[in-house]
Length: 342
Image (cartoon, rainbow, N blue to C red; front, side, top):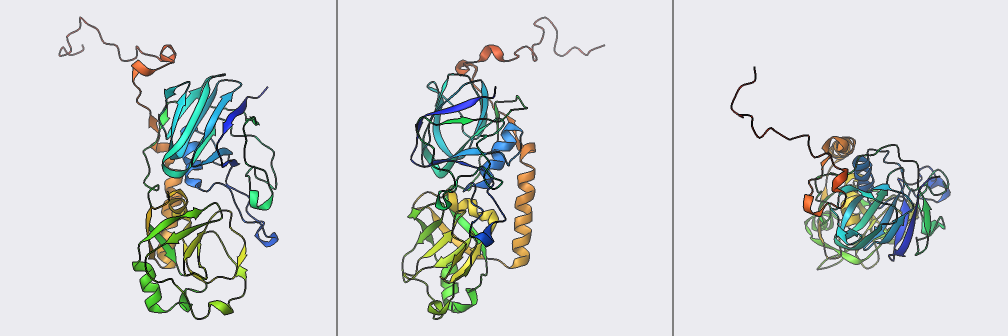
């Protein structure tokens, strides 16, 4: 019988997510999936499993969980306070969650979306080829207290591994390419857009992130004549009040607001993870540069497994100390360390 994970207490915006469901844009359904897909790759690297397996996405804060069996977990994305039965854990690392032990994940200490991964993945029902919750399309629902989730079969056993911390959680420079209406904006408007420091507005969700700024809004004389047309995640729409909105993973598939640019897919996790008030600047790059940057990003994701290293832990705080092999580095107390072996 496969293991299950029961949610004792659920945070306000906790869902099951994977890489989403591509191929349905013509039917009005965007890809969806995890807001920060880099975090899915990180969790897969830590647990040595497929990045397409479903995990639990937690927006702002987590909850408490208990498993029916010993399972492996990994924690990635926005760092959150976390402990097992009161013993604190390292974020961006893999751990063993014993059957009956309570895993408690609190509020985010940096970033927005945290992810709880399990060995074998969260094995909820496939819908249109994906396990991702997409509430805007009526697919699945937010997780709630008392829910019990089935888990897939875990074929690995390694835990206590970690990855270097990433820098995508505090805003920064975001690269964009020209979009359908970029040339409709006057040159001075585009230059001002590129020179402006924006702040991530509190008005943000899985559909879009509003960028706040000081000074006049952005507009184009032709914005009232634009017909509704296809849009994609990363498009930067400029609404009637002159504020840019970066469309995210669960955006609509068509829209009529002018787009001043489109964020590269490799930089969308930086937008998704920024906390309210985080500062951003947009940098235009040409298509050749964009393709090179995206290719470098994909290569980095593929190499994540090679970046995983053992988690250094304090023996004084190890609850499972007896499960560790501690004699591999033992040396003789009598041998002369300077005497050459014969």
